[in-house]
Length: 503
Image (cartoon, rainbow, N blue to C red; front, top):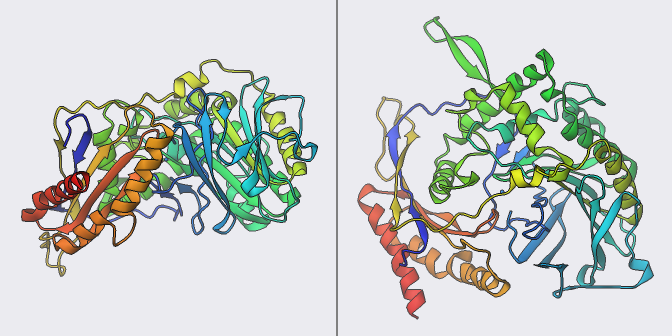
């Protein structure tokens, strides 16, 4: 194993602890780490990270994590989990070229023009018979991406706006902001417009997601007028939320969605001061899940020098340190149009309506020359001189209610590499994707099969290759491991990789 690679061995040691979770007001939010096959962004290194849309079903606010390398796989999951399209985009310094995209002079494929925008590129995707166009708002430099089928479609129409949000701590400010902007705005002052939209609109998808490096607000509907209404509510929410207003109104939103003090009685009738809040309660549940904890711990170890060392969802230990002033400053810094990118999938009329409505909001701002600089993420370099081995405890519930804990065979161990201190070229990334599939893609893949047949644990952990962040990682390990077998799991992973490299 080369010492040039950042590699973190992250066993989670078991420990007896309280595993309860504060349910708060019953938020349906979940905070996710990057999925194994993420939806990557459409921008190059000189541009803002674009929206990653992972339209999932079954959640309220779903939180989730993008990379500006050369090859991008984009999968748009529209509506009730149906795949509308998937394609590869080859991003070069001149934005686009080659692959399945080509320039077109066909008048029927010309994108709509708008006086407030410049067209940076427009490409015909032959495989999907659609035109992909990137616009730039002249006044604010905000980007807008449209995907328009050349033939009219009755499919879901989708719109989303995203901001590159870069936390500098683990107070969960990005996650709390995602919840809070949907708690009323200037134009829609109701306390919970999200709930009203869920009940009263014709939406086929309505959500918001927080990733480690961006926050995304997507909506979808089959009805053009309904989509315009959804867009209006969401755009007013992200740019003019009441949550960032001075006074009790804004502070109340932070206390509801973030954290607050409440007095409760314990079982003995004694009163005690406790923390409450939607995100605080949600993240207590997340931090009681060892799989999630392992994922967060590994990421923290691999990225000691940039924003990924922090938990954008919020660590319950640090959430109560977030102040309203910090909260407002976060919105002012990252929720500026210059730091945004929007997306629309629909017919040409839908695109024209979206461009006009978006312009109505963007034109209320001027370009902020610092907006993108403040949200830039430096690439983590290989800084480990030798593999880093670290561990942390996690809570194990009482065994048979007798106050004892069964900790034997409860260890989690994962070996994680940082693969690319510099951006990968097209061939390297495609090679890694193939390598990932051969190693870890199926139950018969070499590494996954070796782990499962080893008997060293109960199940495999790690995503293999994960490319949802700015940089790519590879992770493999096991859970349900006995303490004496922790080193054996590490050695097995390394031995299999060495064997594959030799053969």
